[in-house]
Length: 306
Ligand code: SF4
Image 1 (cartoon, rainbow, N blue to C red):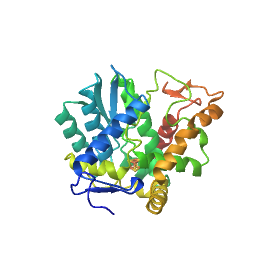
Image 2 (image 1 turned 180 degrees about the vertical axis):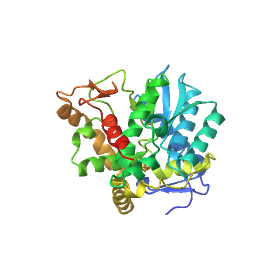
Image 3 (image 1 turned 90 degrees about the vertical axis):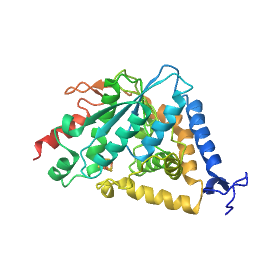
Image 4 (image 1 turned 120 degrees about the horizontal axis):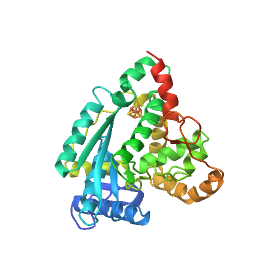
């Protein structure tokens, strides 16, 4: 491993997938350049956009906030941060404080929606009332729903999330392993457009998680190292381990998985988009493909338990 950047300065990182060592200055330059290139190539932003940033207060969403605030200096866009407070004691309360501080530092409006306020229960209470359920299977549905509705309520036309390259590689594998190709097909874009479904953008989707963490440290972003206490029950944890092991042995694996997904995405959309329809949930009126949306189904089960 080379310990010197091509400029002669000491390297702070070695990118195995590119066989390249970079000093702090060139790492930050490469990071920012890739962020802008992803936005340009995938046409993620345009003048006049009002972007809701899904801000958990973790490293990925905080870096996303920093990088979008930087873009805003040269592109007239509006930014508003939306945080979903699941109500996980000792975890979300810490990242909420970080999210609040980051928004104050950049003068960005910050709106918080909570499970307590909408579902009537915190995630801790939901887990206590449904010990047989995998927490993330409830939490994921509730959060996706509230993020979409929250982004709409703050008047955003796009919802930016901090998903990085690792997240996307894991998502691809999870959908393969669950035999859910139709979910893969609509990952980047809903099959049917609706004013009520806020399109999602993921400007960090080509950036490895490790690089997001290093960038966050270099930019002085406060990092909360604690993981969600319920994460250990998640299927994602197994997939993450598998993908990380493959990357360790075969550098560049994560890029290859994501690149392959982008290559086959249109084919998947052609196959699974046929006949796709969008209804309004008969209970809450939000867009969904069935008569009742997943959020309302979960809500009925969750509220029926003590
Ligand atoms: Fe929710 Fe699971 Fe994420 Fe914890 S790890 S915040 S329970 S989705």
